[in-house]
Amino acid sequence: MIQKTPAEIVLIKKACEITRDALVYAKTLVRPGISTYDLDKSIEKFIIESGGSPACLGYEGYPAATCISVNEMVVHGIPSKDIVLKEGDIVSIDIVVAYKGYHGDAARTYPVGSVSEEKEKLMRVTKECFFKGIENLRIGDRLGKLSHAIQAHAEGNGFSVVRELCGHGIGRKMHEAPSVLNYGKETDGPVISENAVLAIEPMINAGKKEIGMLSDGWGIVTRDKKPSAHYENTVLFSRSGLEILTLEKDDEHQNR
Image (cartoon, rainbow, N blue to C red; front, side, top):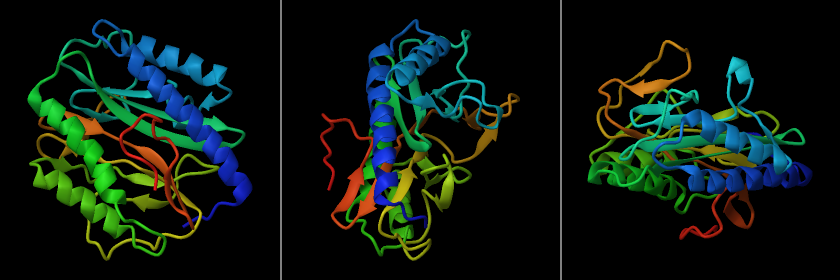
């Protein structure tokens, strides 16, 4: 597990601050009738004006600044003028910001107008999975403690956990070791070290866990076409506890 220096943590925190603010801004734009292309372009402009750069743009050939995934799209949805949000949709917005060579990463799933009870529950439980996962998580614990808690909460609510995708370390690179699974045994995984920075991201399906890839080589969808939700934050493990670096200031959950 890669330990960050105090100087690196300062830059990561700034990248995460811009990421957080970009998501807060994105939420204000979500409404029936807006295309995912227009969402992406507005968020890209916000990131740049905030002093960061959209790290997804050009990453391994990815063509947009953000990943925007609607309904059964799990992750990596490419924004498009042809994808227009409508009442009852849910939309996941995943943003990675680079700032002076360091990264922040977070995602939220938002309702588009009024949504079904199933979708409301899915979004709520997915967010709860993140907080159940980090509950009482400390330096010296194995990551399996997090993974097991996420899986237990999702499956306990009748949902399933995507297996092929996971969270990750983050810092100078968007994706660093270790892989942060959303399922598994409490005794599995590496030991969490001081000053480790991780992107923790439950991806939870309303139906079965199986997924497939679109022909564009990016979009991941549920095979049964049932909705999926995504909730992600970048977190820091320090001597003073776990700090969620991308959490909205008015969120009911507080850093520990």
